[in-house]
Amino acid sequence: MAIRTILASAALAATVALAPLPAAAATAEATDKVIFHSGNIIEGKVLEETATEIKMLVVMGSMSAEMTYPKADILKIERDVVDATAVASSDIPDADVPALDARNERDDEADLDGSYRVYHIKLNGQFGRDISETPIRDSIEDARDEGATHIIIELNNTWQRRGEDLNDNAANFDEFSRAEAITPIFTEEIRTEWSNPPEVVFWVRNAMGGSAFLPFLSPNMYFHSEGRMGGVGNLAGMFGNMGDEVVRDKQESLRAGRARGLAIHGGYDGRIITAMTEVPYELWLRFERGQPVLIDNPDDVLPSDILLTDDGEDENADTVVELVRDEGNDVLTLRADTAFQMGISDGTADTLDDLLFDLGILQDSVVIEGRAERINDRWRTTIDRSERELRSLFQDYTEVPGGGDRRERARSRGQRSRLLDQMERILLRFGEAVIPGRIGVPINITWIEDQRNVIKAEAIADR
Image 1 (tube, rainbow, N blue to C red):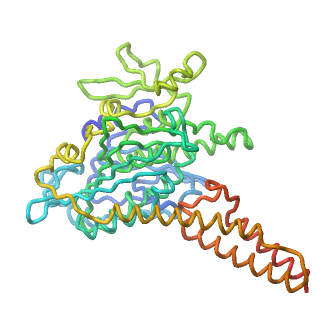
Image 2 (spheres, one colour):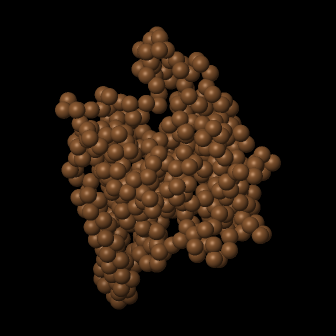
């Protein structure tokens, strides 16, 4: 974690200014807790509060960062919360207090037989459909039941559009909301529902689109040698020409702030997210005493610094050839070597054994044969069936005959009402993954309610 801490502390011209916490923060000092509608929880100290937003000093290990959050995203604020564990240990001499960042030094993780219990979850398929909160949550719960000390999340999402593979320049920041829905599983639920939380390790093979945000939820990140992470570089244009420019800028700023906050909460430099999501933004990499430092002020750049992203304007705009070759640098797409050089990735591993070796637990670990693969297979089968059923129900709805005498009209209304009920049940139960527009069915919950109102109006007119 030392590399990542140094990287964060080098953010001199960043959107967030990092600074060491005062010594008192290491004691049993009361903190404020902000609970978001998404389920995410941020701890620190509220500095300012207005009618629309709050500014907060967010605590991250031995560092802090000032962040601003819109109140519309906040469920509640708990002030002056004291950690009972911290109170109980606050009188222990500093020399006896274990390091906060001893992520690979937890001797108490080992079972009595001296082995670590590794639970391997493969997240394959389409993000937001096959990779969704329900199967992930079920797999994590199974890992808890199996007594896992380590959870390996192998992330390899499909990056396609209409069946065609996409390049690095393709982008879908819209999927960030799906990443936010998954976030509480790792930021809150594991911490509160496990008596001894496991080490969560993200192993990146393909993390493009919304899935690119998930690895930032853990301080433990590794890449496959062919791994890549990005595909979210369209934040600046995601609202197009819709509405007022000031409103568009504000909406983009809010989403950018939430994305940066997610990475910062995981111990990463928020400028990495800015470089991945926004054009224009210039970022360079420098090595000082062998350690990576990020530079985002052109006036501070040295000839030896490595350009990660340019401003993407005029002659700096990526050419068609560069985009086809995945050589563009208007936005940042992380590859295994770059992620390691930047201190984002802890290493590169092509097999599970390689990864366990890098973690230092290969000889003392047992890979648990849990239910993760069956859980994910069953989820995909369920979603496939639900999508087919929804298409069939909608087709039946459009073919229900109307007109006729009063009895026939009543029968028509009854048939349509039953079909609407069945479609609604599918959307309410599997709405996180069954997206009607994605399968060519132009409906949603609002449309269903509108159709019910039409049926009621027809019944009143028929009395």
